[in-house]
Each structure stands twice: as structure tokens, then as C-alpha cells.
Image (cartoon, rainbow, N blue to C red; front, side, top):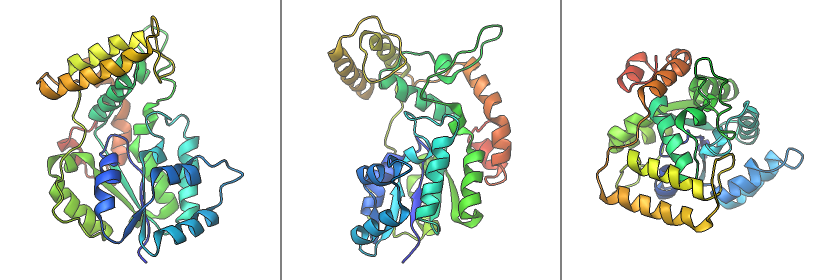
Length: 302
């Protein structure tokens, strides 16, 4: 049987499309359901987790099919956050203990657009912080913001995660792909992806990008309206709690964005400058696995 595939993210790199549309249509594989992954691996306490028990359960469920584990939460996720890295270390060790001979897939994305997408996700989930406060940017001569408690930009230092997985699985088993290549030409990307991982490409499948970016006006309206509902987002600023306003406003915002052509949301120049400085060193290290020419082509900070 072919070695399992561990598709660990990153967030905002079409992971949900792979979970819901791609892997279920690949022949000869068994994609582990998210609920099973959460219950049996991710959120099992350290005293109860057993690699042997998980493998035995999979042997019964997978029926000799190639196991696929695909979820961005394995690198921290946007809502759980990277923190100081303990969660990522725990997940990487559990994955290695359970599937030591796996092929590891890591999709990365230009930090400028990745963080814009992460911030949009936060606002559409009920957040009220500005981009600077969300990212924890330190303004000159002012006490630094603590940032959004459940989010850390450390999550997007790709070189550190790649080094961690190479140390566990070996360089030849860690495969790095760029989200920008997928967005530019999904069919060409999937052909390369399947060839690299020895998968049978689904036939007759429409390969389009899933999540369109929100417009600037939609995000600003949603952020303002979020101040009138507590919602599910902790560490937010709100005036009063009208529980129903969040669901109603979100539906209206999504409908407006769908049928109107407003400019898409982007950070301002100061935030982009901060992102450039924040990830320049990390991406210099990243260039030992992905060529500088390719990173520069897609606008990665270097």
C-alpha cells in the first residue's frame, strides 16, 4: 500500500477545497473525516492518545486504501493560533508517531495576501480589531499591541515549519507547493500535484478557486456591525449585544459582494511595509527549498 499523505495546510491555501472537492474524488484513497481526525488525533489528551489505536481503527475503516489526512488545523489554524509553537510541535510528533512513512504536503502563500485573507476571516467571523491590532504591529513610540489573542504571525514563518517536518520525515518526503501556482492554473497544478504524490487525478472535475476575496467596503461595514453583537469571537470591542444582527449582516454583506463589483480588500502601505520586514529573513531561509526567482515572481517578501 502506498504511504499515507499528510496535507497539513496552510490556512487560506484552498485546503477546504482539497478536503471537500478533490480528495473525495480521487480513486483508491481514504480521506479521514474531520470529525474523526479531531476526535481521535487532534483533541485527544496527551494521556489518552495512542498511535496504535488510531492505526488499528484506520486499518478497519480504510480497507487497504491510501490514507489521506488533510486539515489546516495541523499547523495551528487561524482560530486556534500558533502561539509559542507547542500545538504545532504536538501535532507534528503525533503525525510522525502514527504515520512515520508518510508523504507530507505543505502549501504556502505569499504572506501579504495570506495575512489579508486571515484578517478578512477574522472580521467575517465577528472581529472588530484593526489590521494593526490584529497583527500585533508595534507603532513607533507607543506601547505595542498584544495582537489578537488567538492568532500569531509566527504561523507564517514557513521555513520553521518546513524544517520541523524535514527533521521528522526526511527531505524527500516533504513536498512544498505554492498556492499562487494553484490559483494561476488549477489544472496544471493538479497534474503536477498528482504526479508528485502518485495520485490518480479525478476526471472531468472543474478546478476553480473556491473563496473569492471580500471587498474593502464589505469588510469595513461588517467590522462596524460586529460592534453590535458579541458573536463567537473573543477579545473584541462591542457596544451592545444584538445576537441576531451578526447573522443577518453577514448574509447581506456576502450577497452584496456576490452581485456588486467593489475593489477587493487590501492592507494599506504601512501594513504591507511591516509584512515585508517581518518575513524577509524567514523567506530568505525558505529559498533553500523554493527558488528565489519563484518567490519573487509571486511577491513574497525577500
